[in-house]
Image (cartoon, rainbow, N blue to C red; front, side, top):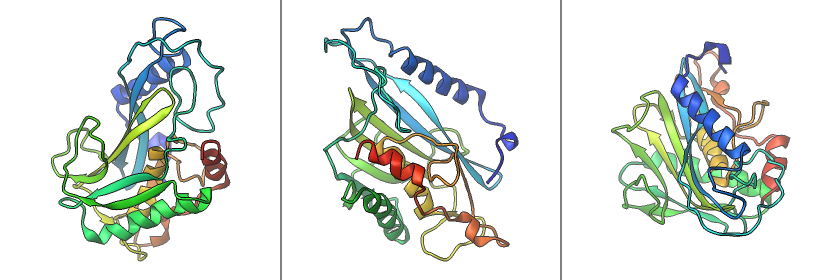
Length: 256
């Protein structure tokens, strides 16, 4: 894993993250305590010097509607929180049905994605994530009713991004999540590490944490730590991060 001092991260991206935190701490851009918000969060994954660095990019679209007094703030449990400082999650609307984009995701990665979902399911003790099948419905930048995992050839963001998870929610409930993976990078899908490639299962375990509503944790060995090393020829096992830590288990248990 690379130390944070190695990173020359984007000032703009970090500022967006700071702005989102400020909005959340202030209760969002609502006009008063009788209003609720709807927000969108994008989680970006960046590759730099054989490491992956991820951080939250915030975009907020606020729907103003009467909804009563604001509730008491909740403990975050390492979840993303809305403007009322309530954890956002799928709640009882599980399992989250995820579809693999047939035209862009190579079959070599299917089992890695299924195994990544099972890591979270085993921790919770029931199915909270399910790879429901494949679809030819393409990726979208707006909610379209499909929780899609896709590869993107013409990357529409920072070229250093390895993948991007977007979740949409209303109030406290997530209603859609999409994962886009940057096709420019190299991955391996099996259990044998390949030098200078990213372990798809480790990556997807992290991304599925975001799908469930979790944010980053700066305490190793959490799977939600913002850095993930690629496999190296000298230490091939360095690319694996497939086990939830006690922090991860405790966090996800707050909502599921």
